[in-house]
Structure formats: C-alpha cells, structure tokens
Length: 106
Image (cartoon, rainbow, N blue to C red; front, side, top):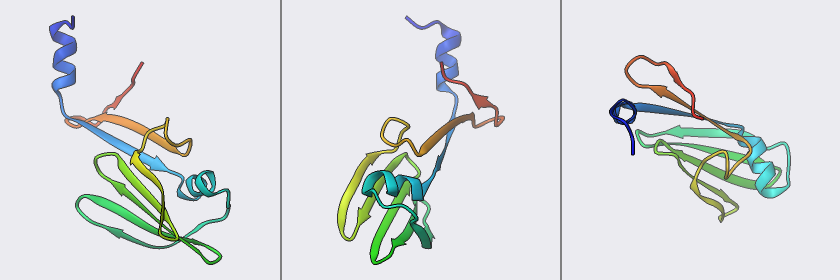
C-alpha cells in the first residue's frame, strides 16, 4: 500500500522528454547505416521525419504520447510505444511540470 506522500507525487503533472537517434534507430531496424533526414513536419500530436538511404525511403512518426511508427519503403518496421526497451537509440527523461525538476526513477 502506498503512503499518502507517495500517492501525491504520482498525482502531479509530469512531462516526458524523448530523445531519439533517428539514423541509429533506422540502422538498428534495417541494418543500413548513414540515413539522412530530408524533411520533417510537426503537428500538435506528433513529429514526423522523412529519411533516406540511397533509394530507400523511411518515415518515422513520433507521437507526443510516446507512441511511434517507422515505415521503410511502405513496409511497417515498428508500431508501438517508444521506450528504452524497444529501442537502444531512445533516451527518456521525466520532469515535474510545475517546476521543471528532473525526476529520477529507481
């Protein structure tokens, strides 16, 4: 059972920041290195990156809720939650929304 202090900490708003090595992630998924970003778009719900490696075309969409999709030449290679378990190229950090302090998870 959680004590009241611990419960109150989880009721506070939290911001999750995700940093992704896009080229490294595509290399991990395809085996091809040196992908380059040639276009990007942003919406209120996601960021999308168009990438290429020679004639191969890829689209990576990172949703603000932690979900991500990766398509290469029209084939889905990833469709799920982006975490450090699903990609070695992702780094997630959590911050208190009210004061911006980093939250350290044990």
